[in-house]
Image 1: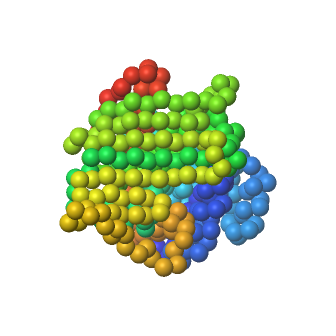
Image 2: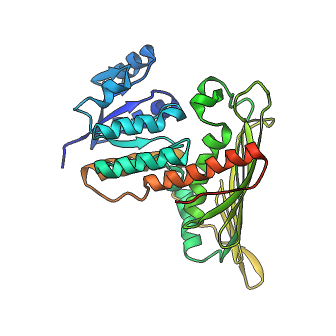
Image 3: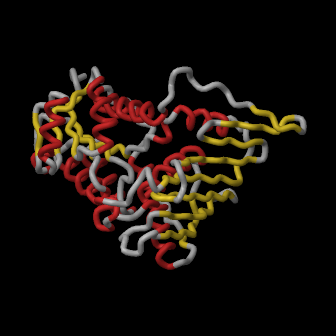
Length: 340
């Protein structure tokens, strides 16, 4: 086993600054040896702050660096797969931000290359690793809610908390709008909690507050699943509301589970009973904790060859749904979801 897994990070935006660098700085089994971004001032600041050995402006220089074992990709969406494949070609393990790919074909190409190179391709599907999500999963798998027939979820950000600017607003760089970005995060939870399950079709629509925008800033979809299940999703960047609002509600024949905050109710002897267990004391930020676990799993899979609970195929499943959403949005018709 190597002393430390040597990591290079490409993309030095919010995810890297608030999550990946602080997490890896505390790691005893990995170290960041290089970072890459086109913003030289950002590179200078972060290499100094985190005592990072090297920085690159050109990604080709980073993935050719022989001292790097693994690459974390936290760049605009359209670069995720090209950069992942570039790193894999140079025999690097890869952790790539969500959405893993713009299209299912892209995702399949990266999965095939990772298998050929015998390297890890890990999509950053951290939402399913959250403690509160795992708690609900245990209830579902234990049959506590009975057979699930309807689920609904949403992530709605207020106008003061988010703006569709920069690369997020550009179709080429973002690859899509709010359904691709926030919707992929919701689908991460959905595939975990409702799975294993096959999505059959989707009816989707989106809206632009400003018609000059290249991508939708709010989106809504109804997804038909096998086993006669229905799932609805709503996401928005700039809703006219005071604060951000997220939820995930699951309804079964024996009970229901609500996320954020967790509430679990069961029908018992003709009465609705709250059976919500206590969450771990002291853990307040489930998001940061889930990314900590994601990075730990990635490092252990490299250094100890442990099996990962997430694979490139999970990222592919999400890409198949988002791709079908945009086809439905464009055609204003129900679209079948291709499942690999």
